[in-house]
Image 1 (tube, one colour):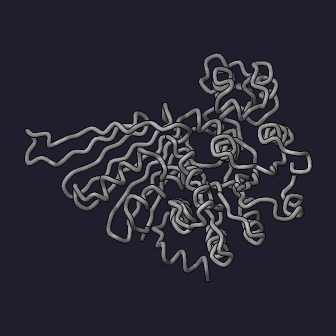
Image 2 (tube, helix red, strand yellow; image 1 turned 45 degrees about the vertical axis):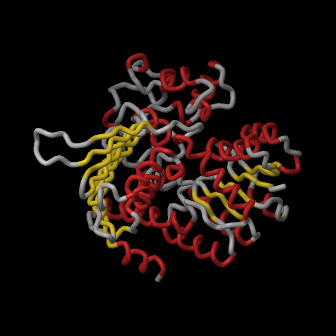
Image 3 (cartoon, helix red, strand yellow; image 1 turned 180 degrees about the vertical axis):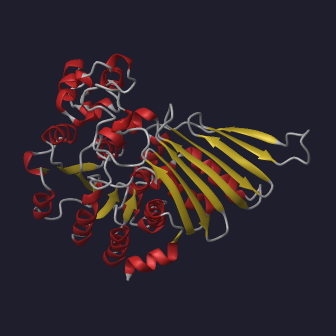
Length: 418
């Protein structure tokens, strides 16, 4: 029977591992996590013996090769060391994005995977959604001619921004990654996939405008539970987490999902802090311009100030365009008209909803990874070779933003490997 180990028993890692264990009947034989609460939950779910639960990766690797594959869902800056060690031991790997915040480390992981002849599949789950697969199918059919330009937007959701990128693990690029790498390598990857080409040049502009101390109300407290403005503040943790008990993002705050348990955690945890007074430094808005090698141009707009979490995209081709919004799973295909009195031929595609997070992408990815292991193939839709481009693009976008320059992608790659 196929065996899997899990490094990082947080929400993302547990989604993948639980699906493999519960739906695909794959044995999860070991778990590594520095937090006792998470180890305890994982041990119960996967029915693990005490000797197969590790609080440090060194102890896990010292125990020898325990499984056929590893899910690595630890913090961003731990990915490189853990992945290289796992490849050296002969593991196939499902690697949470980003591959690494360091683009050179991304390229070195790619090289190592080739040397060891192991599969490294990156968790670019959007490729596995029915929504983006439908858009890809329309483009590849050629019915609208060649793609000319694309407008794509990721609307993070102001509550998601506050939870993950202001209070949470990915708030500070020095500790994790820039937001365009951590959050939006997904979106850059989708653009590469839809366009069918690597990027040639990138420019980018963005900053942190809203979630900063100058926007805090005068006399506000450092923590919500102590703040006089809490009743009127939409970011008050009582409003953010108590109604979401048992669901994300409340499940990240505490293993105890009772009101008492959540409030106790929020008294001291990072998630109880005022959103205007955290140590966050990642952008809450960023616009990136891309020229692809095949001549297609694209804009990508990341915003942390939106009411809901969703992505919208408009693909403009020679003879028509494709507009989609994944919040309602609808795609509109329009053929261009001859004049302003005629709307053109239109059709609406209602994309079938799929079970699971990211529009079913998480489960689609896991199915792909497990099937690849069973059949001993290396044909994943999000292999390390397919996934590397988006990470170089994300790094280039951040470099362009910080230096106010246009970044040439090939020059950047040569520099990284020199």
